[in-house]
Image (tube, rainbow, N blue to C red; front, side):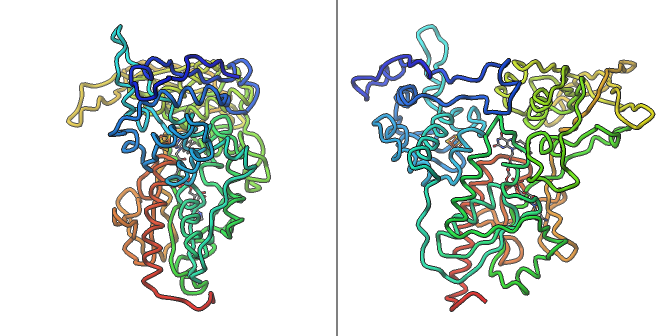
Length: 494
Ligand SMILES: Cc1cc2nc3c(=O)[nH]c(=O)nc-3n(C[C@H](O)[C@H](O)[C@H](O)COP(=O)(O)OP(=O)(O)OC[C@H]3O[C@@H](n4cnc5c(N)ncnc54)[C@H](O)[C@@H]3O)c2cc1C
Ligand code: SF4
């Protein structure tokens, strides 16, 4: 249990009283312990600590945290309810605006969203240092976890009278799940199609358990089934069935495309096809999931051996290095061609990786993967880089330093250098995409060039965040609903 530091302010309106409450410590599993399991790194807060942390919110009238949150959670109201011991009220407040608050509380990069805008985080102490922002994300996760503990499940939303209109949703990631929930409760019949054997998108097939345990996802899916959402897995749209067939043969009135950005970028470096050189998603799903969740040809733990090299500097590469550690690799090295300052992922994740013994090799890039006679990778040839002067965009390009090649051992390699949109929906698809394959939509409604087809999430924005996919899903659901209403009443589903 967390130790509670600080006390409740007697006069809740006194800002300086509230600022004097220190940020409550959120316990983590010790690194030596957590490298031996896939359980979440963070442990749950105690109720006392959570109430004290909520009391750090100064309830500022402008609440910039709400603007900075892509789904505009009413954070001050929720925290006030928690402070007043109304944890169920606080959870309902988060659920008014978000379909997956326990996931966002764990997964959002809060430092650049709600917590980055928190006014408390800008207040100065007498020594000139800044107060840390309120731990909004961890509180959101705590509050909604508590609600599920108390009520023993995800809250089941009330479903309005049926409209007999039906919607096909392609992709069961956060965008698709959100659209399904929002439309089902408005009385429409939703079916989610996904090419993976189980639902969840990257929430299952990407994000490791040590960041978010999968029980939350399972409970969420159960709650969606309870309100009538149907799931059709191992179905690839474009190959097994076309968009046109969904509309013309299967009678869906509208389609939502939430098919994500699941195409892993290739390095295009010699030896990338060697045995034990993995793409990030393949490595993560094999390393984190049970066989029943995977297609037959993707089952079994990935081989790691002693020396794992992970190429890339974003959050996915941190997920890969930390998975490799848990799979038993002795030396895990993250290779990145720029410096730590240019890394795009969360600082917190790098801290966790370092605590778990991961090495970082900055200003370095692979030039060749080298194999033994059996075609298995045994080493990586690397070259050192330096950063150029800033170009017109202000970014400093990595430039290879001549004659700086060197070789390190590698029993396995993981390529984690980002993702592209997964917008290939078959040859007959007439949905407009841009040069990068991103689906083009009306920014206000999420509608594509085909009036009955809407889209959102990573397939529109490029590889982004869980919370932005939820925001897109909410927006699209509003406009799909309008579109369905415009079709008029239907007597029964064909
Ligand atoms: C390894 C990893 C870690 C991440 N960590 C974080 C994090 O910590 N925090 C955070 O906010 N974000 C994180 N992200 C990003 C986040 O997961 C995504 O932005 C989010 O999942 C996008 O949601 P989505 O619904 O648009 O698509 P997805 O979650 O990608 O779901 C799309 C689904 O569509 C399915 N699909 C695609 N094409 C077809 C087809 N033709 N037919 C049928 N189904 C199809 C796919 O199988 C997939 O299940 C991470 C991403 C990765 C890859
Ligand atoms: S959804 Fe994300 S950005 Fe919004 S309050 Fe929660 S953690 Fe912050």
